[in-house]
Amino acid sequence: MDETWIERWNERYSKQEFAYGEEPNNYLKEQFEKFTVGTILFPAEGEGRNAVFAAKLGWTVSAFDISAQGKNKALRLAESNNVKIDYQVGELNSLHYADNHFDAIALIYAHFPAAIKSQLHKALSKLLRKDGVIIFEAFSKKHLEYATVNEKVGGPKDLAQLFSIEEIKSDFENFEILELEEKEIELKEGLFHNGTGMVIRFVGRKK
Image (cartoon, rainbow, N blue to C red; front, side):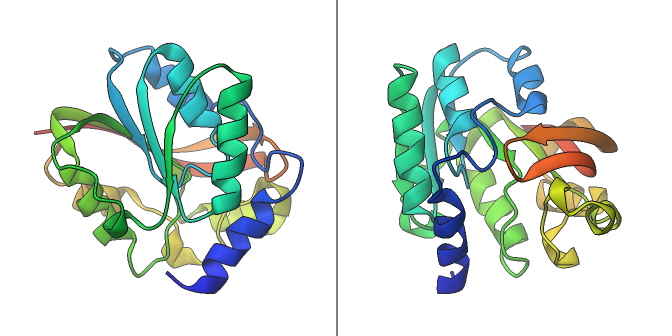
């Protein structure tokens, strides 16, 4: 991955404040009420708010990100909440997670570079066991209109990094769709997700 991409996230996570807050994502929180705890992976987990929340619920949590600064803050957050998470730094292809291992994977605002995002989704799918679930929330392609009006809502400025329902269906074609929608929501997550935005929400079960 491009060094400037890594530097960008290290810079964002180097501040004292948590970029996206310390509270879990609302959609993820809702979905956790529907599933039995097990093993879960958080790709692009940043400062750990969602991973720590899952650990507090009893999940066995693995997470990764390209940002060492993100890991440092995530481990501090875990310690302050008296939980443990396995957090690695690097790109997926260097981390050697086992296929068919996880009960769930949570992709919460995991906006990867456009050239590799579908490839990563397919690679992550292999790490889920049969009947494992993907929980996904990220900005849709229509979100650019919202970010133009209000920069504080955040999100990538590159249309190709944003998502469509068609892309999700294609990337996760071997999944039963439990939920899939494009929805306008209100965000209040830390410093960088504040205001009205347009997202794709998806929950799928691996066939």
